[in-house]
Image (tube, rainbow, N blue to C red):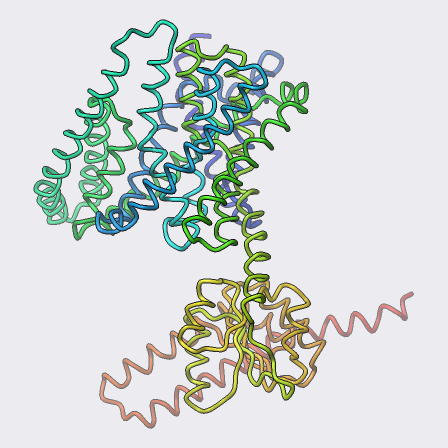
Length: 592
């Protein structure tokens, strides 16, 4: 037994690292979010999973985590690093430009959701003080999960980040208010809140001034040593010092981490810091998600599933609707508001902190806190599913709104050339078609890109080419050519095969990731496949030959010759795979 206690932390560390090493590549292989994988691993190796069987099978001790509390500090550090990385992607100028969204929409969303949830809980029997605490706890959304899913840019990412930023800033005032509402609280509770606000404000100002002076010199010295280890140490030192400073002032450590990231973002070293700290952020976030999985008890969920299902559905629906309405008031599009609302629907990792505070202040019973902790864990688990549902709903709403606004119609004489995907590759192709006077129509699934392209005069349809009705609407049987530029290898092959069946004589030119993908596209029926790796290599060769003084004419001729040679090799490789399949298909009826 003594050996186990001595090696407990080491055993738990091995389980965590092993889980990260297995979950990330395995779920990436099947295009599933690793978020779900980490939570499932936590459920499997936690005290409610295999950990409950160590009494019958002692060897399971080395495959489970016996003390969930021992890894909670690592999970908290992961959230701190996440906020630090978010700060690196921002700037004070961008943050100031978002002030109305942060302190307007963000405040309205948090307070509105808290009031509705709290009022509903009061009417089903919860005292007002406890209902307020539960309302604010459940109104919080997960920074740790939402931002990695959507980022901080784009319409959805920008709105979600603004609201999450306000929630992170409001966490400490919420905790102090709950303490002031406690039955045993003194009359000085509200004055303590004002004191914390004053100390926190002075601390932030001092960190801002000191950071602008110290950080460029600190990272400059680290960069001159050309030591990645020293650069990493300096980065972690800044995060730790900033988090400790805000914690000492009575604020949350995540506020210090965010401010540290913002200060470093103002220096020329922010890119290097972002790259060098990324692995630690990912691993620590995985540890946090494992702790979420450990808090799930399937037996308890099975016994109380009707009430848990009602609670999760009620919280998600309330927050989604409130977020949708306030974003619409802020002039967000329907699709963006709906996707952001569903994404923000589940509770947060900070919900667990507020629930513990409310229970400690005797505002809610321990059993009530345990119930809502399970609801929070379930909500965190379904966040990636809500994100997918939000994207689906957004596409449906945007498709309808685009049609209502008057979409581009295909002429009776055909669309000309159809370009699927209007990113940088598709736009370049369209520009060259326009230069040579060729009629074209483009299709793009990102509404922001569609609106931007239309403002510039490009004929772009909004839609998802995975839907058969959109392919039919394009009238491809009357098109002159089809160009596939999407950055989705599986969808490109599937679409090429479907279009080839509809239009056997249509020229199809497709963008390919590499030669293997190009061979697969040739088997699907494309006329020409252009591998990105091949073209970049040829362009590099052309540039170096010209710089070496070789005449442009022979260089271009040799590049064209090499391109044709490689294309024939790819087609030959594709034919070698197709031929055995044909011979096998011919033999099968005779064998039958």
